[in-house]
Length: 318
Image (tube, rainbow, N blue to C red; front, side):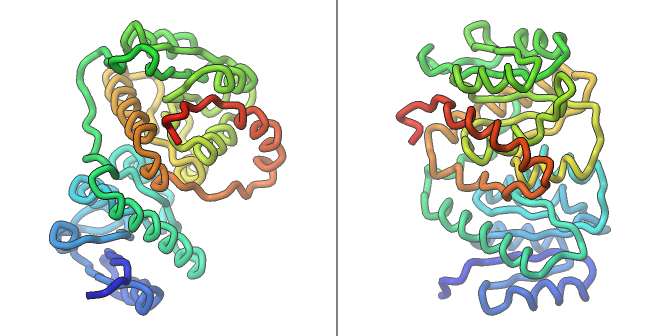
C-alpha cells in the first residue's frame, strides 16, 4: 500500500510516454499506457487522482477519453496535452471533459510538475471529502424551463453580459419565471450587478461595449468559485479559449448564433453545478485557476477586483 497519489498517463507515442513517466516516477504511482481503453479500465479498477492524456490518438481523441474518465471518476482531475491548437479539441475539452488544464506540447517540465501536483492535491481532497464531493456528472436537461429552488429566497440570479438583447430575452424565456435574470450591456453594469445581486450563473460574450470581458471572467472564478460561467460567442480564438480554461475554469463554450436547445441544457446544468458548489465548499477546490500573467490583463485587474470583493455571498456558502 502506498500514500503516493496515482497518476495515469496516456499517449500513443511510446517515446513521449516514457518521457512523461520519467518526470513523475518517485513522487507518484504512475500508470502509463498507449491504449485509451486500458486507461478507462484502470480508472474503473482503482482510485486515480490525475489523468494526463494526449489529444491526437488514433483509437480515441483525448477530449473523448477525458469525457469518459469524468463519467467514471468525477473526482479524478483531468489534463489535456496537445501539440496542436485545435478549436474542436479545446471546446470539447471544456464542454465534455470539464478539464482542469489544457497543456501545450512541448511542455515545460517544471510547470507540468507543478500543474500535476496541484491537480493531485485537489483530487486527494475531493476523494477525502467522501460522498459530498463531487456529485455524479451533471446530466443536461432537454426541457425548456429550469426549476428554481424550493425556497424563493434561495433563487440565485442569472447574469447575461452581452450587447445583444436577443440573448437576454432567450435566457429569460428559458429559465423559470421566478428565476431572476439580469442584463448587463457593459463591463461597469456587470460589475454593479455582481456587487448588488446574488448571482449563480454568468452567461457572457467575450466583449461588450468595446471592452473585453475575459479578465472579469477569470478573476470572478478565482475569487468566487461557486459562480459558474458560460461563454457564448462567435469568436474562435483558440488562445483566448485556452486562457479561459486554465485561468477562468469556464463551464461551457457555446457558439453564436444562439441555439436554444443547447443553451437550455447548458443553463440547467450550470445552475445545478452552482448549487452543488454552494452547498459543498470543498468542491470549489476543483476550480482552482492559474494566476493572470498577461500585462494587459494585470493592468485592468485592480479596477475589477475592488468591485468583485463586494459580491454578496450567503453565510451558508462558507
